[in-house]
Length: 330
Image 1 (cartoon, rainbow, N blue to C red):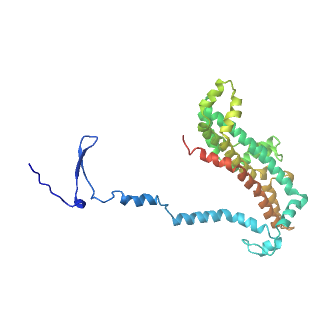
Image 2: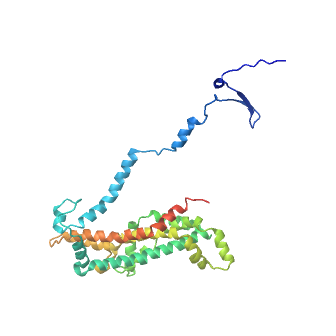
Image 3: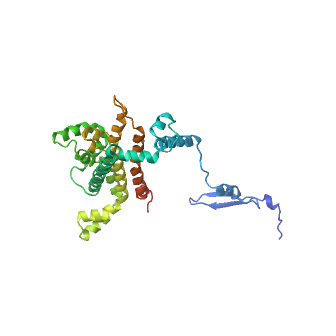
């Protein structure tokens, strides 16, 4: 018994392959012509990888924002190198005829009996005691709100959110009246005490401590006989370090740049911070006996931002680790 075989070219053969899927229904698959790579059409696309999308508009916006942010700093650096005459006679965004930076720094530190150094010491005092105390109190309160349950917790939460929504300038005059009634105006306490309150810092630590400090760790420490203060200072505070650094930076910048509260609270120039003191120097250019010292005002302003830049650079590593801590999940 013989069979008749029919031969066709290999390149044009198609084969119907019936397979059974999970649902039991059959499906037909057509085989590709011989010699053809089924993945060749996709290999090139995979090899190139995802292409980065470019946006000309976004690039222009970022350039504008960068220039807008750096232009005031560039203005300070350039004009701090000018003398008083060059400052008033040359273009503001470029250097003058001479380089007087070190001379301006010397005059700034020695003008009026070295009052600038006194203002700098006052500002450091307000920052260390006020901002440092605000960070400590916000950390303790935020940790307690996150890890303890007590009656009235929701009411405290509402009060904290309401305090965040109220601008500080709206409370300056009532605070002045309150401190005036107890005789605390024109004293360092008039600046330090209001700076100890940081509702935003408390809220930030509150939300951060919920995930940063596991309850299992706290319960284990309690079973080992550790008290609540020991748990906080030896365990929780280390886990909260990135959040604490963030709150500290916000508090330091807010206290260092504080202007309106010292302006209405203080009348003694020896108690002024740098913000109010430099404004007083700038005001010398007005009036009948005007004596402008704009070169010293600009140089003093440049020296004022140096400690803030140093603080950011010093705490940058802890701050960045805190920002990235919540982006990685085990």
